[in-house]
Image (cartoon, rainbow, N blue to C red; front, side, top):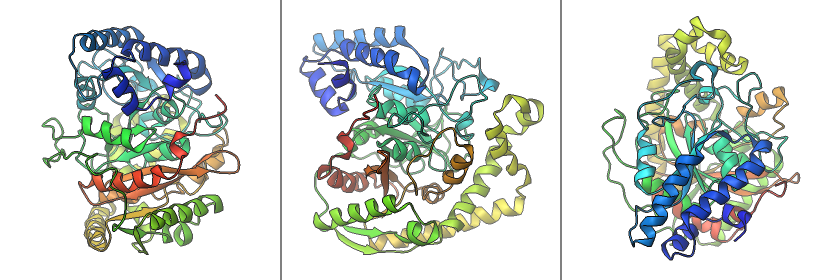
Length: 466
C-alpha cells in the first residue's frame, strides 16, 4: 500500500490487517511519519514528534503479533495527543511560552489507557494556547491549518488533532472540549468528534480550562473508529474527582442497527432563529435530517432554551473558572501569553460571584429540562458550526464566527454530543451537524450517526490540496 493509502486507513481496517499479519505496525508507523515529514510543514499539526519511542513501540507490537499475542483492542494503531495532555518524559507545553519547558513525570490517564490498549503514541499536537486562545501568530509555535484549504482555520482548540486526522497523518487523536473544542475542529476539518458524557472519560493529567465543563474526546475519520477509540479511553478513575462510576457498555454493539423506529428531535431554532446559519450549512442540516427520515427515523421539531442564553451561562462559568486557574500567571507573566489568550481570559476577572452562582443554578434548570426533552425523543439533531471555516489570517472573521455555533449548550448539559460531517460548501470546505443524546447513552448517538454515515460518503473524502 502507498503511504497515502496507509494514511487514510481506518482504525477498524488497520486493526483487521494487523491481526491477519498483512500489515505491520512498523510499516504503518513509518508511513505516517513520512506523511508528516512531507505534509506537516504546510499544516503545523504536530508540535512535537516522538519518532524513536513510537518506532520502538511499533516493533514491540510487531513482535507480539508474530508471537500470536494481542496487546489490546487498538494493537499497533498510531495516535496523537493534544498538547495539554501530560506525557511522562515528553514535553507538554499547552502551546504556550509559559510551559515551554514543562516535562511531566506521569502520563495522563487517557494516555495510559491508549497505550494499554496497544496504541502507539506518535507525538503531541498543536492547540490554541491553554485550549482557549484561538489561532495565534505571537507564540513560539505556529497555529495548525485546515488541510482542506491551508489558508483556512482548522477550528479549535484541538486544532492540531483535527488537522492531523483529516490529513491522514493519524487515524485517531485526543482532543479536549470545554465549549466545543473537539467538535469545532471536527466540524471544520470534516471528521468525527465526540464529547462524551461529563465524567465518562478521565481528565486526570490534562491541563484544566474549566473544571466543571472540561471533557476529553476521541477524534477520528469515521463513526465506527470513534466508538472504538471511546471504548479504549472510557471508565472511572480515582485520579479525577469528577469521574463517573457508570458502567462502560460496548459502544459498537448496535452501531449497525439503523434508525428505523428511533425518535429524532430536530432542534432547528438554534440555526434558523437564534443564530441564523450560512445557507449552505442550513441546507446540509435539512438534507441530513431528511436522510434519517428516509431511513426510518420518526423526526419531529423540538425546542429548547435560546442559544444565546445557554451560551452566556457557559461563558460565565468557563471564564470564571479559567481566570481562577490563570490568575497568578496573568499577574506575573502577562506578556508570555498570546494577545488572543489574554483577551479571552481577562473578562473572567470581572465576573462576580453572584454571576457565577446564578449561572450554576441556571445550569441545573437546563439539565432538568433537557432530560425531559429526551423522554420525548431518543436523540437530537442540531447545528455544530453556523459557518464553514474562515481564513485563519482574518482576525476579525475568526472572532466573528468563533461564537457562531451550537456546541456550548452540551458542555453546560454534560450530555454526549457528536460532530459528524454533512458535506462541503461550494468552496470545498466541510459542513457538519451534531447528534446529541441522553447522559451515558453514547451508543445510541453512534447508532444514529452511523446510519447517516452509511448512506453518505462524506467520511471517505480526502483533502485534495494534499
